[in-house]
Length: 399
Image 1 (cartoon, rainbow, N blue to C red):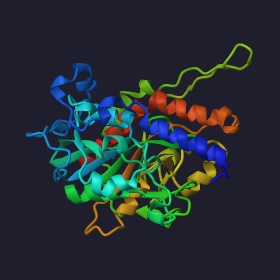
Image 2: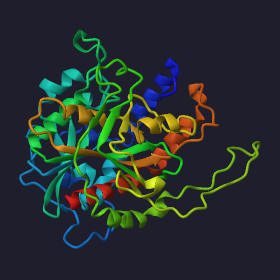
Image 3: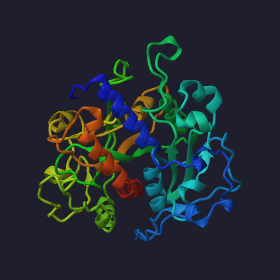
Image 4: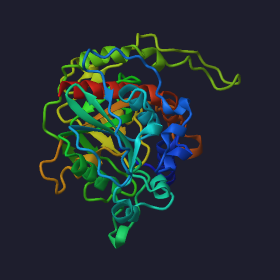
């Protein structure tokens, strides 16, 4: 990994916090939401009209009576965990049609006793007292919990927690509690990530059975940093071709605009991508240079906002397949004292492609590489999240 100054790390960490909180509203801080009072435009999902195969389309299963936030999560076969507003909205529109993210049930079990003491002041969950929100669906014969976490590796930790010289990691305990509550057989993290390879496009989805801590800030000296965690099982690919076909119907939403110089004082040539765009699922059993991962090639979990660019790509690719900010905590949790831990995997869409390293990297205020990485996420985060939600469907349908 490239060396960054303390100013660069501080800048990147703030970008991470900003992106993780982007799109939050006052509703996200409310434990008890009266769905009947919500305006229709924020209670319903977008009508994407996805033509799932007969009998395999996701079927929402609203709970009655409505669960209390302190209740245990229901027992299910599969758990899908996502992280940001864009990711949750994409998942809701694809997998919980008719029930927007604002109607998902709040979850706060053991917040005050187990989690609150581990969360720094100012973190979103410290204000709300909420661990996450969830909704139940069925795909084929599998009961599935869709879960949006309010805890994140990059925004919750208390440094020198309890005098340990380590930073707290409450999301690790959240994973363990989700697994214990649901008794799930499979659990997947789902969301966005930064692409590393030049030929990995917006909306392509990485599917891997491994995750590696790749930290440079408060978790740099953690005993688990630079460790890779694996889940040794065969991910079903039966419905990947169908999932890619469904993804293709939204490809135009991921088309990049013509870029040009920022002002008339600059000179340059407009350009646009000329090759036809087709979102792909990239995994171990994929074919061709673009679509195949090495066995157990991990996602890279960072403790600041890292992204792939043309100079660091070779180094990052040697260590992993994409960069994000939390998934290795699931691998870590599954190595803890959990009896018969579930099979797990990472399903991450590329929301920002490999960035041009010729652009200015520092000082932080003029970091044009970070500017473009953030721009891509804010512009395409929702539609790329639709891609990972569709890929999640493909995995679950094949179980």
